[in-house]
Image (cartoon, rainbow, N blue to C red; front, side, top):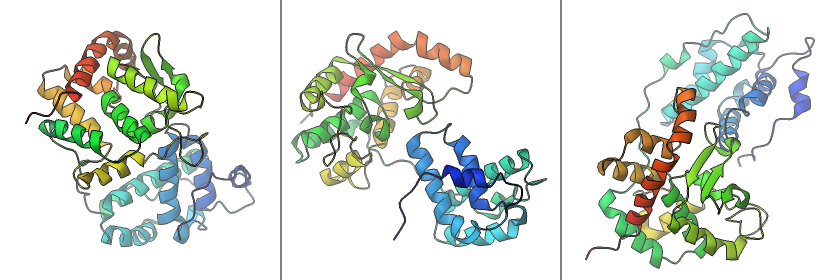
Length: 317
């Protein structure tokens, strides 16, 4: 049975700094992760660390970092590649190289012997998130309306669809992030994938949805509370599980709703850059990104309102 992900122990992290101890991979990784987790979302950080626990630590966790060799690491990861987990191997290698660079920069080793090991693995297939075609949206909305899922789950899926947010961003939404007066939802940087605050204009349809949820969870922290613990947010996989039960298994996932919005808006001729900003895709030029966030808010309101109206269009029989 897989062990539950746990936060690295800070005492363990400090231990590696002792020059008299053996700087094993697990301890150095924990020290690196203390910095890494500040740059990624909590959900991404947990998945990242868990993959290292699964693919590296059993075989190499106790190995001194100065003793790691390229053939050794390749041998450990090859079974995962043989099972088709090429993308996972690439990610693990990337993170491992970050750990090694950290070790070089902190004086634990003189050089990184693992720089080129990614070349020993194949190229992963690019798999798109399953999504539906724009003309299938009315059918999906009808299925959502009449499906036997809870009201809170239905509202969660609708909120994610209208706001173009990622599943975790919607599932962890808090009432304190909502400004009903200005009709804005501000997701703080620590909850975003790329650690940058994201502001979302709220359409009348979303305000109506939130008012409905306020009657259910308005006195709680999270808009979508968990069933078993109302003081915690709903599971980030709630929307996915519901969509499967609606008969969309292998056709659509919650994250695919973003692709549906992007495709539809691009087909309608909306400014591509405006769409990217609405999807919270990172602009490599951080100055331009800040400009976009402020300057585009009014134009984004127009885009979001069109999208919400489009979502609610009835099925054409």
